[in-house]
Image 1 (cartoon, rainbow, N blue to C red):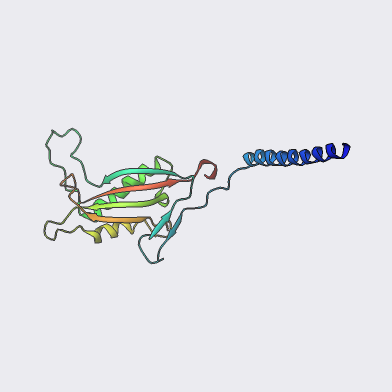
Image 2: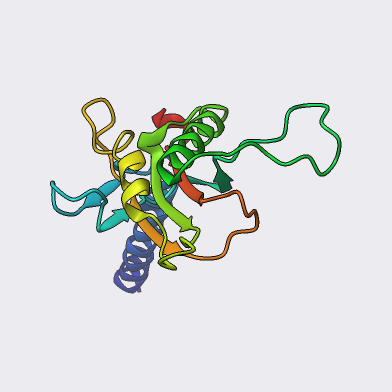
Length: 183
């Protein structure tokens, strides 16, 4: 009888020991920090103006900027219906729009290097029906893929009818921010 009781006690002890190991391991797992997210990964030819793909790590915050233009407004205090001044060609408007985007990003503690995606909407030229992609590219190349800001976002450019007849381009932007503990 003694042998049988000891065998049952020994078997029960092994089960309890196994349960203790599982509980302790589970508790310790809750105490460890998850691995920090890596950097944003951009792929594509080094000579290309844009990235083919951009991968945002888990845990990053995504910031969406509404479409911004580079059109000028009528002078302050002008009566309603006052025509707006000529806002310039596509390159001029795109440069101004990118400056507006830069300011909007800065207000969130971000910069051009944090942009992962851009959508550029180009107004059609009345003669050709096509947007001025060359003017847009000239403006873009002043800000992206340059020595002080080498990051290039993924990008799409399409010709559409814009809401303002003065606008030649509208640029929508998506940026990401590292998690707080990585900043």
